[in-house]
Length: 156
Image 1 (cartoon, rainbow, N blue to C red):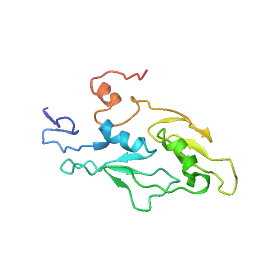
Image 2 (cartoon, one colour):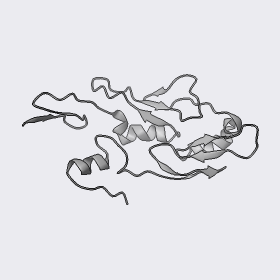
Image 3 (cartoon, rainbow, N blue to C red):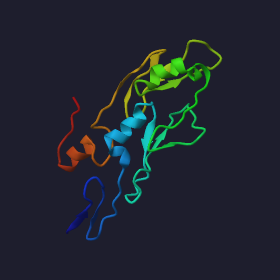
Image 4 (cartoon, rainbow, N blue to C red):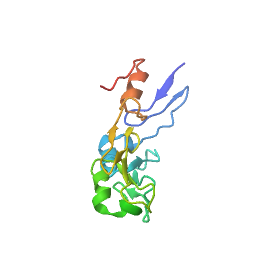
């Protein structure tokens, strides 16, 4: 059986026919970092003919009154103590999001990791977040590259 495989940076494959190729612009570390640097998530619809349409999305509980940011950060609004830019910037400056679990209580805001980073949140301080590049799913990410070659992935 023969197979058509899309050329990088697109992904897709099909056996005995032309492949349907997609391109996730968020797999481009530069694009993803634009969003992550603001504590936001990068999303792309994967249509290869549509370049420059990746978006930055605010992470709940933040809202994006003007919609997602196209090819750049969104404008996010937060409630409670996180609405205070001094507090929220503690989080967003390290790619995390600010969450105030009880807007009626003082001093309970936290910084939380933004997916795909994982870890412990921080009370009125940055959390301990780490990005496991092997667990991140995308066509050009470490875990996908290694598994496609029949190998394991370890992010040290």
